[in-house]
Image 1 (cartoon, rainbow, N blue to C red):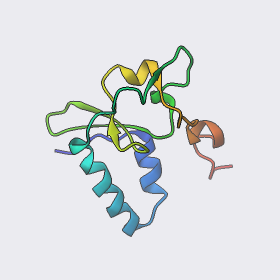
Image 2: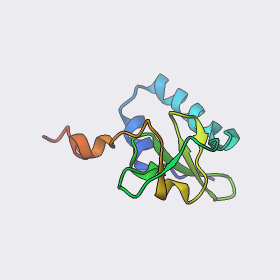
Image 3: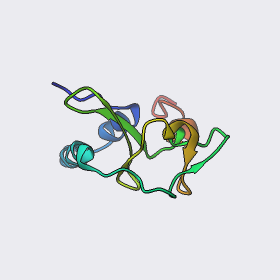
Image 4: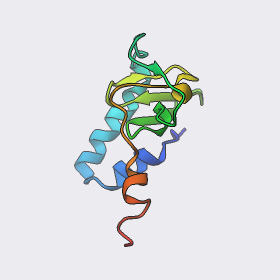
Length: 106
């Protein structure tokens, strides 16, 4: 059964070479073994700067088709629901918003 990947994953995978692609698959397949973020890393916020809008946010599904939310900077899982109301001090804007969805077309 295949694993669903986010747009960030596909953008990253398509912009790498074959040898790097094998390495990224190893990284993303390890997400299921990652631990959850410790308390105190995520801070509650009322702005649009939440985990879900961060460049480092990713989601996939495990072998039981459950959604896995993760942060690739911390290499940790994000508790469900916290990706909508929290962020950490490493939040950065998604590249798609900075350069557009298809910068190569321009």
